[in-house]
Image (cartoon, rainbow, N blue to C red):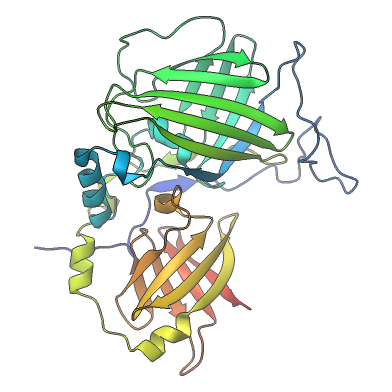
Length: 357
């Protein structure tokens, strides 16, 4: 028996802890006159004069050619298309598996938080999904043929004020980003970390994998400080009960699409803003060729790299829609009036975003 795609039933499998220590400021950091963290202050340095990357961070923005289909081998492009059609249900995160190198490109304060702890001989990166990385800066070199693991092996060296990190030894079970780009065990990643001021880190990433793309791909990750906040765990629920409700494909949703009159769809066009958990978000809805499209800022999951990419809204009723981005959206509107809000539906519930002028 076919199952209707259940984006409105199940949209994620992780349960974040609610924040605590909300009133405890981060000690020893620069602050403005009103007591807020001074993100434009000079970057701190270690006793030996190196930039100190220590702190709590999140990836605010990711750009680059990591989605350029012209450079990706056909088998990898085909897999990405199939995964999108299935609402990305085989994302390693949704199966309670490590994201591996894909964590680099996870954006936002709810899924991409990481704490960097810097020591002269090793730099640790602690992720909120309970995974971690060790970047050894003690002079060792990468092994030429290591045992493949989920997070690989990393060594670092300083090039002036830039930390250069080289990594290899990944298994082929993870994605490079949330839109489903696979890689082989030949993957090698080079990251270049620069901290221009207290509140920002820029990471230039180069991906090399002759088994997946013809030439190196790149990404630029803009990380921002989360001073006065804390890193709390995001624990995956490994029970199969939730996944049993998540089935079908986008094509099945299109077969069940409800015809909604253009004048009704036009009432939903506009800009909406609100908070999902503690993260601010903006949703812009447009009507193009008789169909609704949505652009979310910051992009959610699937559009983390292609942040200018719009997602389709597939009508389940006059007010409820499934999104090709993997979320549900329900509009509230009085008869004949413009919608006053849209609810973004996650497994944690419906999060209302009121319309803004």
